Structure formats: C-alpha cells, structure tokens
Length: 296
Image (cartoon, rainbow, N blue to C red; front, side):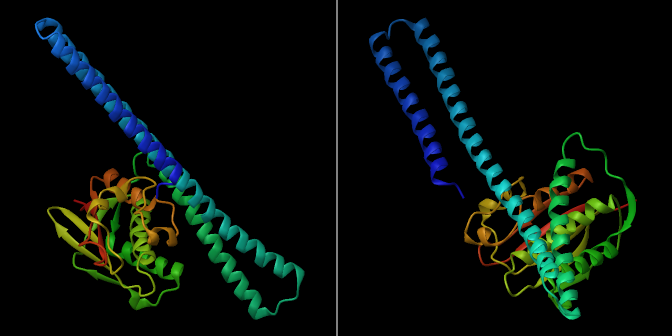
C-alpha cells in the first residue's frame, strides 16, 4: 500500500511531466504556425521535440518506479523486522518467566515447546532472506540429484502441518503422477513449502489445501490449491516479484516478507521449469503451479 507522502510524490512527477510535454507542444505548435515555410527547420524541430518528449516520459517513469521500489524495500524491512522481533521477544519473555519464578514441570515443557516453535519461525525467516540472496545471477548452480517428488511433497506437508498445528485432513495430497525429478532437494523443498505455507496463511480459519501432481509433456506439475480469498487478475504475475504483496486488508493481517513466491519462481527457473498462479478472482480461491522437468 502506497503511503500518502509517496503517493503525492508520484502524482507530482506525473503532473510535472505532463505539464512539460504540454508546454513543449504549445511552444512548438506556435513556432510551426509562425515559421511554416522553413521545411528543414520543421523536420529538425519535430525530431527535437520527439526526443525531448521521449526523455521526459522515460525520466518520469524511472522516478515513479524508483519511488515504488523504495516503498517495497521499506515494507520488506518492516516485515522482516517484525518477523525477527516477535519470536525473539516471545523467547525472552518465557526465559525471564522461567528464571524469575518456580514453574511446574508441565508448564515448563509447554514453555520449551513454544520457544522451540518461535526458534523455528526465526530460523525460517533468516533462511528466507539468505535463500533470496543466493538466487541472484552469480549464484552457484543447483546441486542436482534424483529425487522422488511424491516423498518430498509428503515431507513438506508434514512440515507445514507441524508449523501451523493443523489436523491431517486440512492438507491433502493426490499423486496423479508418480515420477522422479533431477533437482536440488533443498531448493525444491523450499519452493513447495513456501507454496503450501502461503496457501495455509491465506486460507483464514478454515484451512483446506490440496496438492496434486500431473504429468505434461516431459514435465511434472505440482498444483497447490486453496479455498482462500483469491487473487485479482491484475496481480497474478506481479505476486512473483521480489517484495511484492497483494494490496488490501488481508495482506496487512497475514504475516510475511514478500519473498516466498519470488523464491518459488527462482527455483523453477534454475531447474528449467516455470511457476505461475491461477485464480478466478476475489473469493474464488487460488491455484499455484510449479513445473519441473522429469528426470530422464
């Protein structure tokens, strides 16, 4: 969501660019009306005006993009700060409680369980940020090995069930294609966990997520379906950009760094596949697809 100060900056630069172009056109039309007989100067003047207009348009677009990019970076920093600070504060609180007062054995084990869960959340956030840095152009090639995709998906489902304390029937797997892939296990695991975790977060209270596999033209498709709020058509491609989150009230309530889907798309590209999203619109649920080549 664009904050008021940046919204005003974007509006200012757009209005400024439009005013400059209008002034140039008015001056040029007036000059043409007064000097219409000088053909060579007319041609040169047209070229000059087009160059100036092009420069103004490009400069305005660049400034607006830079403002939006800075806003995304600020939102990312705020999100990461919250994701790091919250579990640290929780762990500290429970440690102070254990240190300052006598706690019975049952509650002590409960505190340990909560602190371990907060530690896992903290490590997951750090791993997200580190993995994003490793996905750059200069990143090393993936460590390829033959992997049973069905077993990997089952492992990812079990992990997400534990992370969110979900019953077994809330996450279901329908293996319509049994195949092996040649991939980096850590990267593919991170991509699938991100897809399932994302579907759970946006499902609200009634979590019902389905994972399916399908063979198509030498590739295996992993489909992660949810019954959440859906995605507007205009956001289906943008959501895979780094730091981007779908604007709206739901995005402000759902915790996240805006890196999960960027990692999914990066993993797919590094393995010669693709990643995309499908949705019939708000309130109709979403389907995320990860396409990976089958091992020969």
